[in-house]
Length: 332
Image (tube, rainbow, N blue to C red):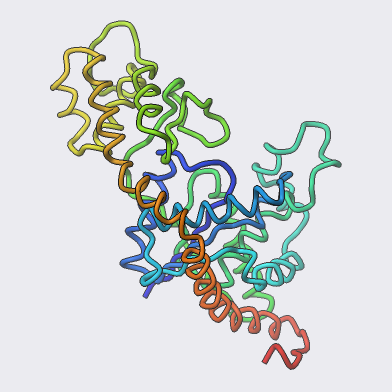
């Protein structure tokens, strides 16, 4: 069976774009692949975090993933820092990676203040190698990636190939799992840009756990245009097209067919708001139940970490042996 691995940081709140574009694909993957999903709390440390808040957000993210449909009976859900094999393998891979290729990572450049690279955190610089370790530790065949992570996956592939060439066949070289063409959920206030945890304004994004009245207010205030004609045209009418996309995701149907049912924006916005609120109600209700049962969520995470360690351990041992490290009694 094909193995899939993907992770999500416990920073920020899940918005509708995340839920549709990532979490719901994970829910589908778990039924057809050997799926490992993790909350990547170590990656979150590349920026300043309040310790108590990070712990709380890690548990909240795991709770949301369960509420969103991940089933621990058919997938493995765990917290990255609960599996020490990730960090040890990251060091081994850092000894194979080059400074130049890490310096070329565009995300490092984007997050580093121009002219102030010297103050950037080393963890931010080596972040892509830890991501490679996350993947290679499980011999993952497929990795769901967005546009912002494609370069990091290419680095992962390069490191796996280089390691295999230098030390012998050790790692599966993973392939990118490109999500099927589907909805592009855009910013409500700037519909030419994707809805984003970090870049969208509070009014531009719909949080999956927001109160219905807040969601309704945001959609009713969504940017459209002046002519009041409802049709799907991403280039000419991005705001209206985004509303039709939301309606198609939440209520079903095609954007083109849905557009024919409206003669103005007011009725469209009202129907979109009702559809989105209804669409998110099950996850909101389930989250409210699970967040009151943290012991259950922690039990799921403990079981997931046990399975993750038992899977990653032999792969790490193989890499250690290939590089010539002397095994100790605890290494088997």
